[in-house]
Length: 153
Image 1 (cartoon, rainbow, N blue to C red):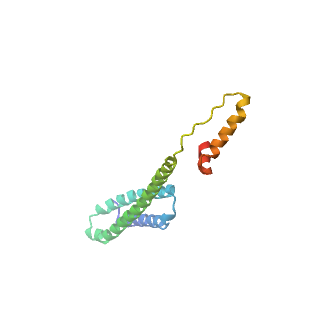
Image 2: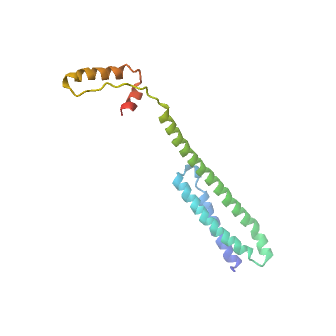
Image 3: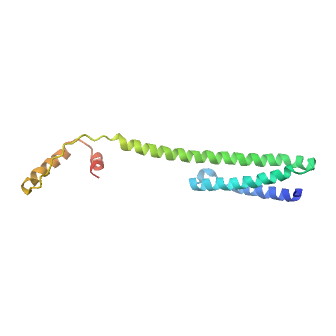
């Protein structure tokens, strides 16, 4: 069993780590940085739970009653920070899903008309006829240049 003085120092260390971690605004972090921050918060939470358990093992009720509100406040701060971080992480995943779904929907919306393409038989004398048929077909379809680019790209 640790002494009250040692536990208070450990609690102060945890509180300092939590304050440092929460001083950065989460809104400005990338998804990777947010995941890393939540991992650090998880480590801090585990250390805090160990310290809290050591406080619970204190025999002196007066010492524990003095510390109990502080422990509850730290626990509440950790939970609030964790919820806000997970909420932002959820928003990242929702944005990724939206981007993925939106891009696939856009790709499937374009329906091209069935075009009977002229066949080239390989004879040089028929080349100019084939070329004219092909160009006339492309120019008279009535498709925009963007759609034509998508067809032939």
